[in-house]
Image (cartoon, rainbow, N blue to C red; front, side, top):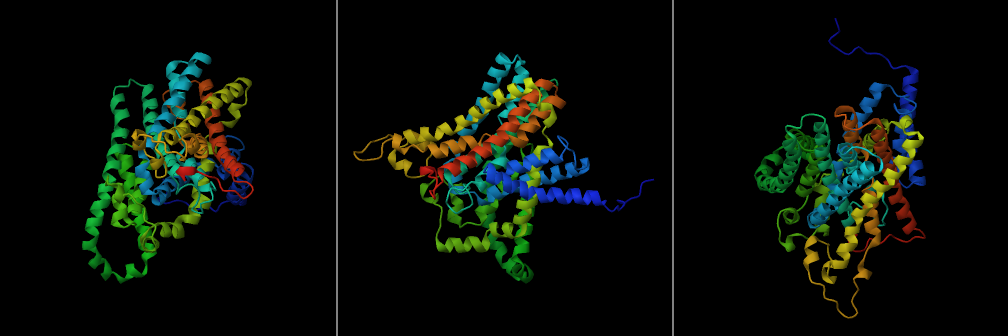
Length: 491
């Protein structure tokens, strides 16, 4: 009879040394890849390939499963931090553009995949669709990693606080929600497909409802807080330990939003992002929170006054997050996430002549399909009026008549090519969602053959590596000789 407890066994010396070497190489690989590729996460993905099942299999299998679970927790925290630090005014203003970019990044890879894989490689339509669906996703964790590491000279932690960064995050988040739908659809394609309509509609409906309800939940919380303040002041212990209380609030809010999203049938990552946005809104003044709900332009300004900055430092949860979770998340959990991507790459199966040339050709096509996302920024630059071009670009500005004034900036001169290229390149990485979809199609539904699986893995792997690397190298190239990369009106 098994004992009703876990029997304690001291790890062997070899096991301790293996774990220590893995933990030591995580920051080292990040540093080396940052210097070579300008994208540290690539080094951690390669380290995962080496230490995991794909290559040397140095780590025990149960350790790799544990690292994968902790890594996914790191992904959730990456997305949560993104919501916590998102410019909510820019999120609202750029939402329409983000939807257009997301749809472009979703439909183009599927269409091009069916064209190449079906007509060129002889795959069945259903198999081509499944592989294209895997390549239509965007790695949200990698996207956040890219914009946080990107040095655009604004001194605010990468591109998080820029308009192009907001469009990028919003589009990637939409891609993730649709990617979850794709995963369920692919799983159903191998069966009778009786509930396919509900399988497709449920995640989208839940995502829309949660996103619509959250701003009103913010307003309701603000209405209740004044009545709770007298009671709150009686708890002197809580007043003295504000960081502990804020940390508990972070954890409870993240768990609540994530659980509601997951059990309702949509992406847990959407719940994490909305949890961050919810606490972000509560940290602002009521006038700043209204920008998420109201349609009046006067409520959409993003306050940067000294008074507001003081309030943010004292009441926002960003400082608490940085003090309590920041270092552990940066050096352990997020590193585990990128290493776990490497665990899921069938590295040895990639190296046959046919697999290599087909994988490279398909990878190039998939890079191009995501680069097309960035074309919308120059389109908006061209058709936006000079007045709207000086403010936050929106889809409404497309309908504004353009009146050229003598001596004013011409349409072509207003085009910002740098943010367009950065947006397209940053959307290239597929990562965890793409791997999930293609493995479901191969292992569960069986609609993807081994040859198609290897071709898809080639594209996912190369895109996940090339995308962040290209962003970093491009920013480095444009920022050389002490110059600052200009994002134009998308800064």
